[in-house]
Image (tube, rainbow, N blue to C red):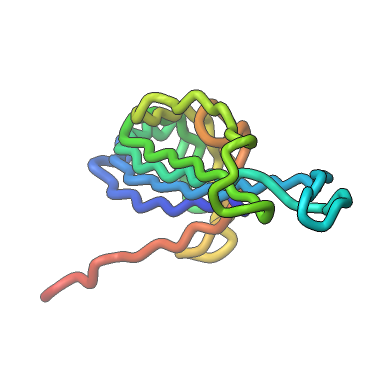
Length: 152
């Protein structure tokens, strides 16, 4: 399932903005096998597999190369924290230790470097496309702009 991304951006100036980005990925894989059951004296099917959760949060800085009413072209980079957990499961017996996945846990550091483009088809609504290094090579989605109400 996923990856799912959430981002919030605050403009520091017309060319520079700071961004908080978070992602979530759930990966589950299972296999079916056969094992001899001495009590029933026959091979019985069972499932075994692994379930992985990958959650990250990054603080990122974007530099906007070109900005007008419809287009926003930018580059960005950032770093943050990555949480990764792995859990094995089987339907053979609860205390089965024959199957044990061997995942090397990554460092708890997350990073991303991107090149992106936004197209505002409405004043406060856009679509975006980013490519680079991070959780995915490319991602796309919607942007919703919130403005402060001017007092006065």
